[in-house]
Picture 1: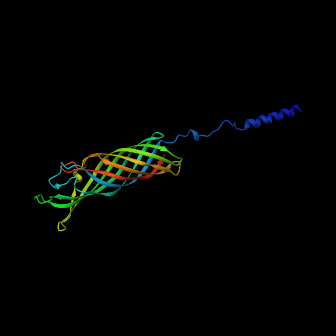
Picture 2: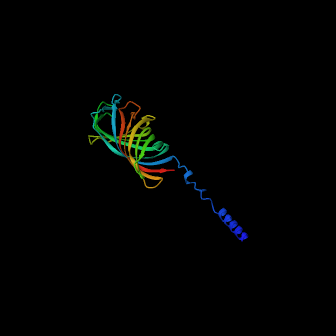
Picture 3: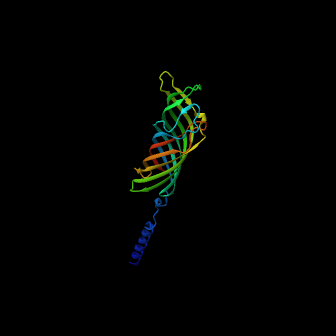
Length: 244
């Protein structure tokens, strides 16, 4: 009998030893730290317009170019990407690169393209393009599990590469003229801006954002003797955000 009891105790001991300890859990999910980087893919429809800083540097080519001239803006489509780093859950900093455009029309200017002192009335249709490098700060707060509000102030460097003005004369007997001033652009200038909106997260790492945005270029675009034109933009900031 003693042998039977001893054998039973031995079998029970071996069985208990063979079972894993309930307190030892080999889960590693809690130890995995999520990356602090986020990539924003941007598609930005903008209404662009011109603001005249002043016309003190108006060239002899243009006799009339002032704030009295009516300006009509135009729509442009910018695109690019931003890389953000999370310094804190509600505070991210980012650097980006964008391809940007602008267009506007200045109506009722007076030009002397031949240099003979004879001026003609015309409309000046301008198109510009640039590479922009924005530095952004993203202040965000989650209002639900799937939606976060964002305020994004920014400053960006603009490297303009094209400025083309189409001169459309009021007199139909005069052929339109194209002025390419791309070689006279500043090496770079500065723009400030602000975006307000939010991101909808349709998965743990993927979200779509929609924001209203406004930007203002601080410097004039043409470096030579020319009216001091700058850009002001109103529009949207649309895109896809991914955590990785």
